[in-house]
Image (cartoon, rainbow, N blue to C red; front, top):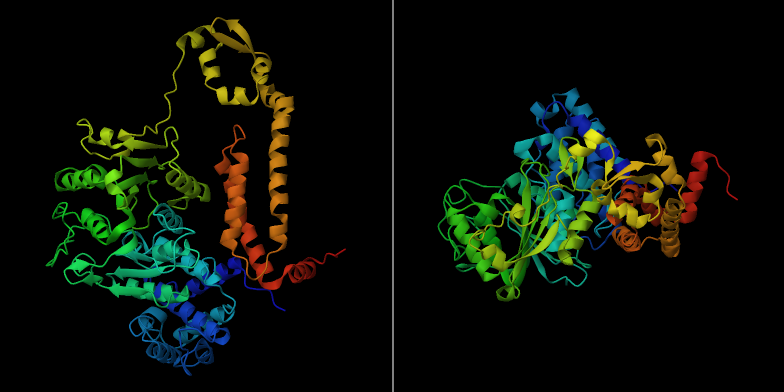
Length: 603
């Protein structure tokens, strides 16, 4: 039996296919070819094992037909005809057939096109999606996200707007209130849905999915979204085409249709947002956005699209929090109505379309009149560098969501800001986060007397109180009195580290951390041993991760989210592939393959 397809191998094959197309076009163009082939291969594989599939793969319209065209001088034309048959059979004309596989300018002439497309279809033939699961952690979904992320990175500033980073999408889904109790018939809507990844991440937070609605202006990106929905098992999602502000598709007469949840990452500060606007659909009840900036047009569209208990999470530039004029008037009225539930400041340079920092504005109509404050988070410093972009780590995502949903107040990070403080004349309904949360590091004060006369200021040692609380005897071991207010080290500075490592208190601290790690492993050993085809990997990591956070929270000096990140790094690098193999092959078969691969013996 062949090993199941691993995520890492899948990624390698997909990017190899991208290499075949480089040279004749940029990433914004070759993504159409790669994603079309991915789509055809996926639906062809699924049709073999899923008789209830909503996608009909007709004779002459399958991936096998494309494979049969390998080496043919007319391979490009044959590909186009095969894809056209599949599109025609499923009402997907102008969705999956946008890429021209017979374009000599992009794919080369004659033998060059023949070889390029033959190599491409061979790479995809090695991928087997028959076992792919549309349950929030399926390989196909991971592959699609992987490609979209790389396409956005390579496409440059002007063409990366169709993709919202997966980590940010998950934050929006979780802070907007979608979770274990969300029903399948509840609705989620994205008025500027791009490739649809944000909608899918939101719906994936509900145990049985949700009813999905979206609209996208750009034709090619709309087609991506339609394909993405099908690839993730959401064939019945309603994704409409057109400009959401000037031509909204989800309407009832002169009013907008309303939804339970709205999530959105609209284009920032659009200057032409009202070109051709004839009907405002009662969206501007609280004020009309300025002519040259459409940020509040999208925000007000989201608000008007909510049911009476609906909630929205929208990514916007920080300017919406403090700009005056018409925007200041709208912001004041929304705050007075109690619609603004929270604001989360994100790190700069997260998004592919812009390097400026953005924020998440959370709106909530439920019990709005009773709202007495706005919960704010300054998460601008929690990220890691990833090439020329910044990226949220798993720990950053989890901390933001925990802090917001549990309304945890953390010094220099989060607080519930009373409406009375926001409305105070000195703030005048300005929501700029630094007004309310000082996230700057304390100033490093220099003691000139110590520099001149020696000694370590006791005030500097007192500032390390977290360490002395954890190791009460250590301070006296390391320092001795010099004169009032100052201390000296008891031995050479080069011996400090070893003295700490050898101290009984530090050894006890290490033993406690090891014991907690062992306890966590033992607590989940049976769950890991029981991994099978029905296991949901996302649920598995959530259970283990939450247990680690709870166990390490009381431990001094260790940030429980740093410990959690160790688990998630191991998960992404190694454990995900291992779990996927066990799910598909079983523990014994996987162990047997490992024995064959390494030449080891089993006892």
